[in-house]
Length: 144
Image (cartoon, rainbow, N blue to C red; front, side, top):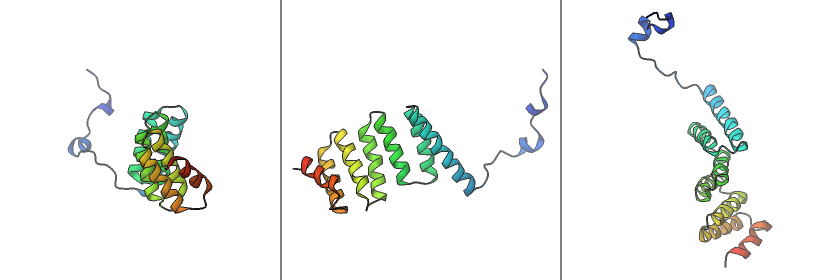
């Protein structure tokens, strides 16, 4: 059987196993940005499994609240509000002084039919920003 030269192991490759290159910060960040871009495209095309896979890869490189929000969105749009709430909670923990995250978390808890946790999120949003009208009005409506 004839083989192509590229199919034959060369003395260098046969002797030493292939090793991964050392950490490259610029390359890692470029990989993260590409993963985010792919995740957005998959979300747009309603391919939630691939979107989540890309986002988990990006989160493994560097965690951020914005990526957690995107991952939460992928779970929510796929009909998994409880898992979406888990990711939003992680995002809210990183952004403790932003009421918006608590209000999003509240909405996800309500979708997951967890009214007690939704009320806790309402109260956190009101504590963070007492004059924020949506937080005040929704807390009155749902927390009794």
